Every structure is written in C-alpha cells, then in structure tokens.
Amino acid sequence: MNLDVSFVSLHTMCAVLSIISVLMAVASAGGFLAFKKHMQEIVNTANIGFITISLGKNLKIIKINNGLVALLGYSKDELNSIFKSLDKLFFNPEDLVKFYGLLKNKLKRCECVLRKKDGSSINVLIKKQGFSFGSRKKLMLCQVHDQTSAQTDKKITEMFNDIFFKYNIQTRTLYSSKNLGEEIKPVNTDCDLFLFFKGKVHPADRQKWVHMYEKLISEKKHVKSKLRLAENPEQYSWYMVELSPVLDEKGKIVSIAGKASDINEIIEETEQFKEKAMRDPLTGFYNKNATAELINEYLAGEGKDKVHSMLFIDIDNFKYINDTLGHLFGDKVLIDISEKIKKMFRSTDLVGRIGGDEFVILIKETGSLKTTYDKVEHIRRIFDKVYHHNNVSYNITGSIGVAIYPQNGTTYEELIKNADDALYIAKSKGKNQFAVYSGKGRNMA
Image 1 (cartoon, rainbow, N blue to C red):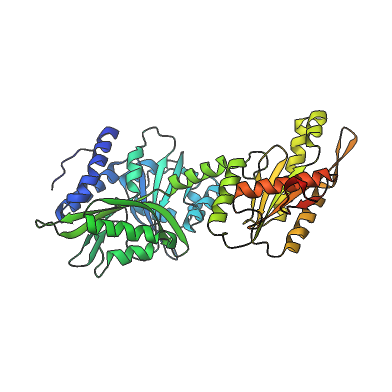
Image 2: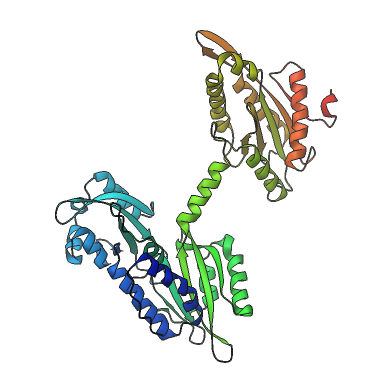
C-alpha cells in the first residue's frame, strides 16, 4: 500500500484521520510501514516541537524534529550542551522547577518561557507522553507547543499521542512505535498479546480488556474501549485502545492491528467537571442530588451488609439569622460550621448540604450505637457557639436526627425520612439536642 499524500493543511490532516480506522483493519506489514513513514514526515514538518529525552544520570537529547529546531533555533548537539545547565534555557527559575516536575512524573504538562538561540523569549507548553510498548529505558517523550502561534495544528498533537502497534499471531511478535516520531519495529518477539495487555491494564479495567479481546476473536470485528494503562508500576493513564483483525484469504485472523490514544486529559477534565457539578459552591459538600445518588450507590453496593448511621442536621432558627442579620452573615456561619464538620469526619464518609441550613452525613461502618451517640454529641457541641455581628452577640445551636442502616431503612429515601422524623422530635423537645429514630414516626416518646 502506497500513500502518496501531501500533508499541507488541517483539512488534509482530518482526511488522514478518517482513513486510520480503515488502515487498522486492512493494513499489510508493508502498508503499515508506509503509513508510519508518512507519519514521520508529518512530525518533521509540523509546527510543533517533538523531543525524546533520556532520563539517565545525565539528561540527554535522543531525538528532536525540525519543528523544535524552528521554534528554538538550537540544533540537537546545542540542546544537549544546554541540558547540562538548564538555567540557560529557562528564563524563570519557577519554570525550571515545573520542568523537573515533568521529569519526576509529578506533572504531565507545564507552561513556561524558554530562551531561544537568538536571545529572545518564547512562551511554550510542554506535554509528555509516558506509555509505550518499547524497552524499559527511561525515556521521556515530549511535545513543545508555541503558545504565541495561532498556527498550531491540533490534529497533529492528537496524533502524536497515538501509539500504533501490530501483532503477528503466528510468530508471536509485537511491533510498535513509541510515537509518531519513531519507526514501527519489533518490541517483543515472544509475546501473547492478551496477557501482555492484561499485565498493563489497571486491575479495575481487566474485565473490560477480557471482554474486548474475546469479542475481537469471536466476531472478527474492530473493537475499542477506554482502559487505564500502566506508565510505571505506580501510575496509570487513560487510553482509548482500538484493535482490528487482519484476515487471510480464508477469513482466519493472522495478525491484529491497533492503536492506543492518550485520552487522560479529556477524562480528567470530564471528571473535574462532574465533580464540580456535584458540589455545593458555598460549603464544598455534595449537593442534594449528588448526596442522594452517592448514598444509594454505596448502600446498594459496597456498604450493603454493614451498619451505618445517617445524621440529619439542621441549624436552629437559621431563618431568623438570615432575615435579621442578612445573608452574608448567614453564609459566614454556614462556612464556619462546614469547616468544623469537615474536620470531624473521614474522607470516606459522605457529607452533603441538602438545603439552606440542612446537612446530611452518612457515617460509614459505625459499629456500636455508642460510637454514633458520641459522634453526634460532639457535632452538636460545635453549633453551641456565640457569633458577633455589629457589636451584638448571637448564640447559634443545632439539632440532629439519627437513623441507623439497615434497621431504619435501606435506601437514602427511607433513611432521610426517618432521620427527619427524629429531627422533628429533637426540635419539639426544645432544640439544641439530638434524637434517634425509634420506629414510631413523629409520635415517638
């Protein structure tokens, strides 16, 4: 297969991307190599710097592309000389600290200002790619983007994060590229692809990999799945892994073509957005919907056969505080109380703000009721505080209703109803105290 293509624009790049899936399914060994050759041409002509650094005792540049030379003006030998004293390359000391964060796997990207060969400065974004099928040599593969240029081709940066590989079933040989700047070559000559990937996949994702591989073999169709792959024994990143069977004239699978695309940033940004959407902006606790969803999920799964306590907390006379002292003062009270509540509970307990002055807490695996009672009394005391506003003192208290899982309910809805009944009793007895649900609704003694 010969791909005589001139990569000159974003539109052309999109066209290339559209045929990748076809290539994955029908590529012969020669076609795959031809494809890789053109990918290397993209790397060398791109307006993006590509650099491979050896992380031995002394940092060493293994490979750079023409894009990096164009961005900074240094040759590979000149950069190697500069790497002996990196403060010559970085304008700001704090940028050098961030770069070392990349080297030590503490960061995956950093923005900094570099000194070009002509003495001028350039704002860049340095991104690293950590996962590969290659040897165990300590290499760091990076992209260097000109942040001041409007010509950066996003499609090229996405393709740089794609690792292409091919597995010959008969010879048990795995061929791979670390990135677009590397030739595809044998990396394992006695390999079981199924076991190879299973060893790299995060334990929680291994069943997904098993299902994916079994479907590929049984249906002989293109398959893909989001998997966490090991960049090192302690660090995993998200990849979209795709596999396509290559068939002989009898319809038998003779090899498997695939690619692994780094989607870690997309996943992390999505998770951050979801996490933010689940939080109450004032206190940082889970909001009403998230609280109910997370508690129900936990009780139906991991916490099903254990004992837990639900607390329904309400600040006494909070409406009066808002109406007479203003919402700004009321918010200060809420924030102060929230900070104290945070310090009292484990990170594994679920804490939510479900109303203006209402909080729900699920204390996981509480054990004895005495432990729950001691915790509840401790919480009640944090409300017993005098606040000062405009030279006037205000005493603020709180009431608490308690329901126990599973005897007082097995879902969030059942527990919150019964804890609310207990809260009603606590308030009817004079507030500033707690009550435990006894099974008699709001008429309990």
